Length: 187
Image (cartoon, rainbow, N blue to C red; front, top):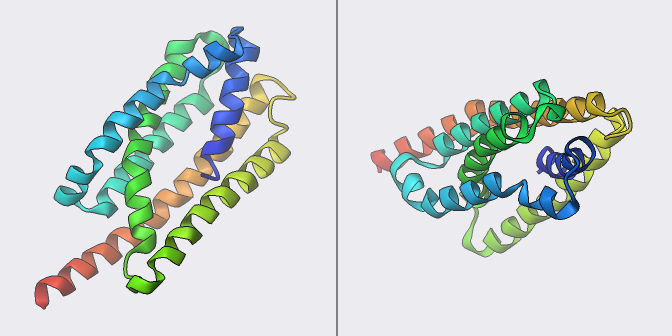
């Protein structure tokens, strides 16, 4: 969430400032991301059962990194579909794979009486991470004050945040899930 709130906030501004979209059209501009996110999220339970949380998180984060990186490297002034719409499809697919498994990983291995508190902590971190991420990224890059350059720098910082999360998933979450599954098989 530290990376995604700045993405949503600044991309809606970019659509309005660089492409001349109205606020309504900027909102509609997120449909590729939103629709694909919804479709993928509806299938996550089946995918989790088949592949586990760790691999879904890894794939989802990787797709999100690729989508953000494409948007950071390209300029939105060149048009909506290539520069924003298509990368949003990758981000939407990735985010659809991430949210449910991320919450599951956050409450996994908690005692039943602590599950509610763990869930509340996850939701709190979503809110705090979003606020801190937006303040940090906009504060460091200047948001949209320097035009396309600031926007691209902001997306690059968001990409770095998601890349750090991907590294944690690859080196902590996935191996931990494998160890846990091996222990279950031994029992």
